[in-house]
Amino acid sequence: MLHVVSVSGGKDSTATYCRAIERGVPFRAVAADTGNEHPATYEAVNRLHEKTGGPPVEWVKANFADRIAGKRRFIERNWAAHGVPEDLVARALAVLHPTGNPFLDLCLWKGRFPSRKAQFCTFELKVQPIDRHVTRPMLATGETVISWQGVRAAESIVRRGLPPLQRLNAHEDLPGRLFVYRPLLRVASVEEVFAIARRHGVEPNPLYGWGLSRVGCFPCINCTKGELALVDRVFPEQIDRLEEWEGLVSEASKRGYAGFFALVNDPVMLAEFNMISVEAGQPAHHVSHTDFIKRFGVRRMVEWAKTDRGGRQYSLLARDIGTACNEWGLCG
Image 1 (cartoon, helix red, strand yellow):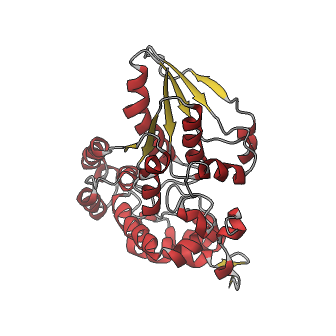
Image 2: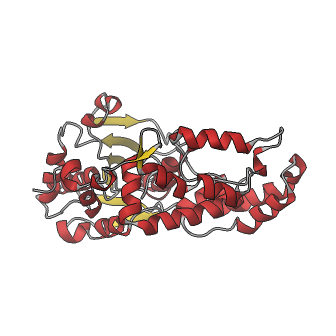
Image 3: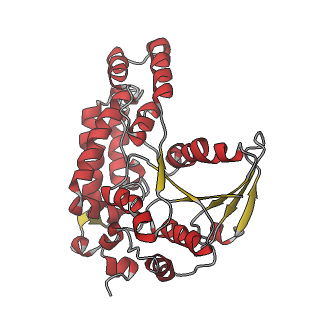
């Protein structure tokens, strides 16, 4: 029987890693490098074994080089024939080369950023790489594989109905059997999660100290309004990076523009976009990507994140949000 623990640098996966140590079973620890993590998260994951005496965490990451090459071939054959302007075709072909950053390469290949309704990032950047590089090779040996996951029933109604141990029917082409084990399922409080890690000398990821509710992708496409304002205030270089990515992905997009955050977050911005994106029956790709990023990109979303009342006034309390005390009770 082989055990593998998935690690993200967050509180639940760290506690799961520590629980595996407490159970005394030999295990592998693996993390997926999305290319969109904060340096503090990389450090927390890389030093986990030093603090606990457990196994070092193995990093895996997705490679989209073949799919980007395939998209280049598709664009060369099809875009112009389907009415895409020549300048958009030329820009896309110029930018469509692998960068080595999984998140950016995924978005270049897709020609867009993920969203709440099209959240392909988790599967492509986390599930698939771990499956390809770790789970499938382990199952190919014919062994039973136990995948430890840091899931708690208290997190959502859906997770409340999950069993602690579950057989998965995937990988029927391989001789091994795969089970998911959720050792934290009945852990009710966040305080207990942090306590499990502290028993092994592991303090929370420093990003929790700033009041962030998630420390995986930084920022996540699903981050809250308050978290986005906090990221801009404390880590402005992350916003600079996203703005650069918006420019690159826009050039790879058939529409000619792409934003990191969905416009539906701000109804005022969405209404403005709908007014300018289609004029006199013209297709939306007549909006230049530079104009789109300036008017609807991450910078505009950051300004919206500082407001309340539907984006109509700046919040006087904006600088008081996002502390470890009010989010996690870590100030004591």
